[in-house]
Image 1 (cartoon, rainbow, N blue to C red):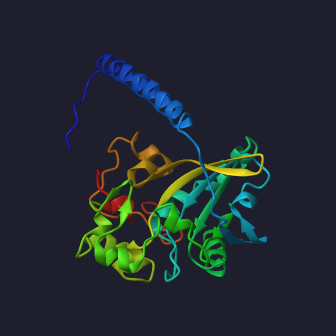
Image 2: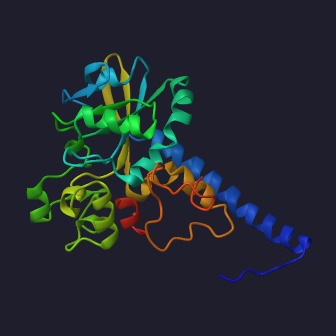
Image 3: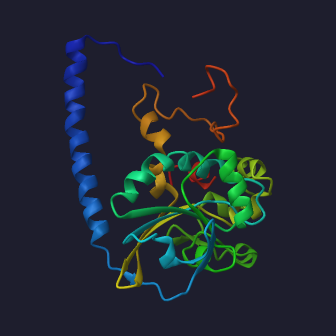
Length: 268
């Protein structure tokens, strides 16, 4: 892509013009955040159970004594051999923010359907510290629309990101990015696609847990720390396919070192 070369004065005029648009976007983002907070709450009636490093836990237990819980629905199905590399790039930023959230009455927790032993081993491999929980024994992921059955796949009854069908992971045959990402998890595309990424927010008051918000697909864009930086880099995201890897899979060279459904989602 060719770029105009200008004087400092010309650049400053263009930059200050863009600044007004950035400020408008910030104000719009603030307004959307306010509207998220104003969404009605839904009482969680199901008695969900999880396995954690500390043993069995209820959804209320995951709050860790705080009044707010943010769950990242991490793609790591029971039949995966490793966690989704796209979810892994997002999760690489969790340790840095989790401590601040914890000191602001918010617990950040990653939940996956894989057995706890697999989650623990992968956590050690990645060098992460943030808490994780296995929801393998229950319907938590299914109820929050981040896991689906083979029957739902066959019947085209997968409802993800508040609509049925339309997502790249629902296509047959699977797009090449989905096939590639599935292979990095040691599984095939249909098995890989039965788990999806997302985030859900919960609140607890007087011992009652409420669901307050969920987002999926490109609704998770803001959680990708690398993309927030790339959007400000000279060449932007500059993507022609899946270029990212788990952080321990990059070649240790100066050039290499430091869309899953996200890539496959394209601009949908």
